[in-house]
Amino acid sequence: MPEKKTGLPSVTLSGELPTADFLARTGGVGLIRSEYLVRHAGTSWAGESTRRSVADYLHALYGRAGGLPLWYRFSDLEARDVAVLRDSCGSAFVREDNPIIGVRALRRGAAAGSDLPDELRTMAALSRDLPQLGLLAPFVRDEQEVADWADALRSAGYAGALGVMVEIPSAAARIERILDTGVTYVVVGMNDLTGLTLGAARSTALHDYRHPAVLDLVHRIVEVARLRGVTVRVAGNFGPELVAALPELTASEFSFHYQDWADFRPDDALLAAHDKDLAAALRLASDARLIEAGLLDAENAVTIAGMRPATIGG
Image 1 (tube, rainbow, N blue to C red):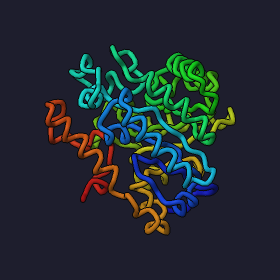
Image 2 (spheres, rainbow, N blue to C red):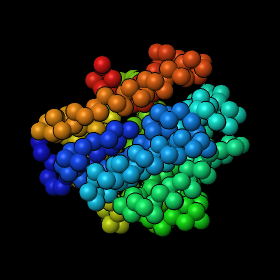
Image 3 (cartoon, helix red, strand yellow):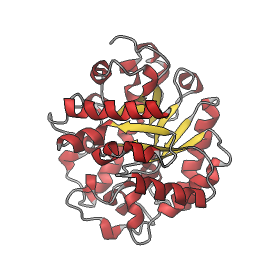
């Protein structure tokens, strides 16, 4: 794969804790998928163990990052993920025909007894000790959802940077208005954006990151963000072939998953070996709980996470 033109790509983390030497070879942590931390803790945000576990992880990561930016995504948990956590009150939304587009991410705030306010308060408090930490809104459909989330954070005392995941086609269509809310960072979430644009499950050949309709949306989002002076990253479980399909993007406009990093940066393979299999292990353990509860078919385990087969292999 030809070297991208300028800058360093960011890394996407799913519970891994890379070394300081590795992080120094990145442009920062472009995306922290916090749902992996919550699943590993095994309790909802209402539980002290989850709040402490996430805080300990972020403090440790912050200490290794050496001043690089860290972007924490609010927990993109589906209703069924929440239902199998201890201390959870989310059982009312367990049975969904299409959980991938159901009551997930910030939408879980609509559930009775939702733990979203606990996450809001926790992250607002943590930000006072971690000034390089930015907060990302996941799976939003329009500017109103972003504005409501931002208002809730500001009311909780958060004064830091805000970003947004653009992974629903409606969010791509409303990108100008979303940026009007004051977010300064955009992550194009290729896993969901591809599936929702093409009407394709991630486990099928129809889920094609390089389909022209998907690339057109990526171009639009990146162009608008650049014109506004907003930092943009493209993230997901894609391989080098997508990078080659977007030659106009610089290296600094990508955030590569840690477990895939060596596919894009072979010279960093040894540095990226630490915790390399952790994300797949955490997902397998989480899926096992869902299968036991009757909320997931065994044949769909892990594939719904968008992980590449090579990542899951061992």
